[in-house]
Length: 377
Ligand code: NAD
Ligand code: MG
Image (cartoon, rainbow, N blue to C red):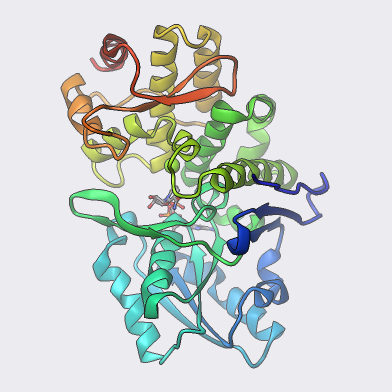
């Protein structure tokens, strides 16, 4: 079982959440200006060589700072970097090859550490590159988006997209630490911020009613990037993710609950193409659809649906699919979901009081039809 440790309430204090995975356990450090703390990162870099993987946007903002901090902590450390193009459309095997090209050009050996500096795209790609380079080198995560700080940097899912499906090629590969500098969020576009907030709401809905209620009272503070509110939201999210991952690392059971709203959401992302909806935006719509279906099944009170919609809207997130999406379109795209087992569609649905959910294929399919009909014109 997980034993995440929460620390003090103030924004200034660093918080540490432990991901409990036996001999592959690792800490998540959460705090302001942690990027300056090269010594803390150095502690989790076993050898003398680091390859920082980042993209063209983050390079300009944080690459120098990260490099300087590591060099200041240990002048002997050899720090190289590779800068990938920015965008989900570059999350593929061809671009991933640039990481290995750079590593080989620099003659990096098996003792090297790959450091992901960026959002979820960079984190997923760097982790997969680390898992396969010389059959596995060390890996650390320095996530710089809300989405990556509350979700993708924790739990070890890494990979790239295939032309026939998102995240279809990858590996489970855990980092040695996750260093979250919450001040990096100050440069994040507002739309990207809100997209990450969608996953925080998700933790509230699936297992943390207290977090959901806290969000209802503090959404504006998050959107204004109040350091204390951000620290609390990131910490609570990491605790939730760490507990779920510790209980079910490879998604044989409870980890699937993290996909609330994602089956509907993936259908929206796939049908509209990369870039129309951000991942968290599609998940926002999907969570409202899942809640709607849960009400129709009689599994939750209608007030939970209403509160979910209101909360997501207060973050500026969309709550209805685009007009272009039809009932048939949803059905076809949802059928290829990774959660389909033996031809049966399984969904994460809400059940019981706020904070309860189930993963099940055992529902009245007419209720899914009703939900799709209610959301598609
Ligand atoms: P992203 O990595 O594309 O980052 C979003 C945008 O923000 C990019 O343009 C990026 O360059 C920019 N950016 C990043 N940090 C910034 C900063 N501090 N200031 C200014 N701009 C900044 O997107 P994301 O939302 O972070 O991650 C989405 C990806 O994560 C998807 O590919 C998704 O599949 C993956 N994901 C993985 C998991 C997992 O468990 N591994 C979970 C959720 C999402
Ligand atoms: Mg997600």
